[in-house]
Length: 132
Image (tube, rainbow, N blue to C red; front, top):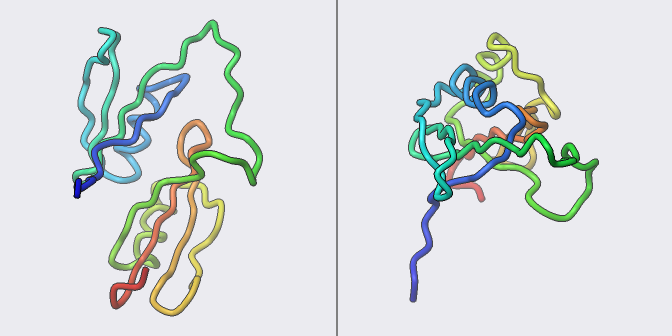
């Protein structure tokens, strides 16, 4: 049976440089310049082993912003932390905008949502005792 592992998340942005800088400033991501398979430049960021590839959206395309919720498609990606309250305080100092403040979703699982560049929703979560 095949084993599937996380490899990357690929985002499109009107300003990839600013998006990469956001992930660096907020989550201490390492910024790595890269090249797409079509030869165009791309910026990748690495957040503790999770690669986010950020490609420039074509300026001549009429590209809508993120849709209102609910919708079908990718809703968010998640970053796990050991202490959500500590992480939330740190993110506030860095200027993060919260969609949803930290809260206990169920015993052993605390979550919050922040707004990333290009209206990307990012879940920050704390799991206790292997809560899924």
